[in-house]
Length: 464
Image 1 (cartoon, rainbow, N blue to C red):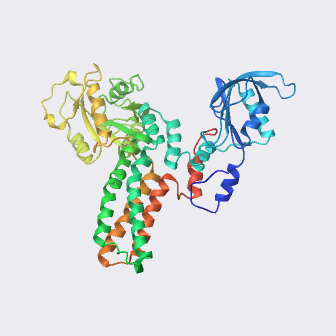
Image 2 (cartoon, rainbow, N blue to C red):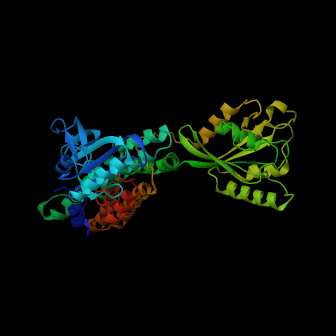
Image 3 (cartoon, helix red, strand yellow):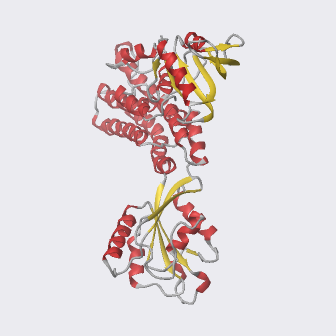
């Protein structure tokens, strides 16, 4: 029986029963490929696998064996495979685990799954292998979520952050504050339980000092969400400005290919043009917009309306001006309206510069025609999306669930500290302290309800 590491919930017994079953799934993407992997996990994984293949040597823990996939009726060789067996508890799931790596023929892989089902296995749900790793205590919930993040990573930087989380970086960052909280709870409980045995009641000043000791790191952790959200989900960048200032040309330079149509005629771009790129390892959706001016026809009017919507929705705004003419009043108003937002002003067409204007208005000068200043533009954009506090990616919060847990713990700790001057009984303080502890436990999974677990693991791909 798998030892479940969460507190009892109404569905826990059902989860234990499900974990007793042997599951099977294809763990490689759908379609044809050089290699395809069928994975089995559970008490009967080795027994079932033994009926699907004919190994040339007995299966041993963490040993690779050559084997033949058998045609079910004639028992003749259908394919050759490499089979790896991992004995419990030293496997990914904490159970007996068998992986059959055959040629990536959908017919062969589906046959292996079908035969396994006929021999008592059950088709795995999305994320069920990782769920079993969590339930068996092999990984905590933040590590399980990092597995999904690594699979979905679009850039090397995202993959590196996910790998840090898989290694327990977030759990390690939470642990000191959690340990301090547990010690404070134990101290107050002892003072209540053994008050008649001459154990001193903890002074309010010491309680406040202990709360103050654990709060700063949790606050830094909460602040890391802004950068973690950007790393995890990416951001959108809208390129805006008047017609014919070179927005589409700069867009093409950043995309590094001719994605948007560029002509000398003002107002060429009528609709939003989008492309996803990597900026310093962060996924960025570039949005090229129609030039902002009084529309000359209905199509341009609709394009300008979409441009203003993109401007309002974007995480970062790139305002493009023409270096050959002084900035207009409407351009100055646009720049002023972006005060407080992530925004960068670019003075394009620097190769044609003739206007004598104050340079303090402009952050970067570029020439989309010659490529001058494009590297500086990338660096300036990257500085906008980097963490201004200089937080490391190690152990940052990357999901809204993480942030809500940490902010909930901070709120509970603040409530406990605010109650101290009112001489609130320690029994009441413990309610807030236990609340903070539950929030921190929910990050790693000790007290996470089953409905949240279901939502998390159902977002995985089947076979992982």
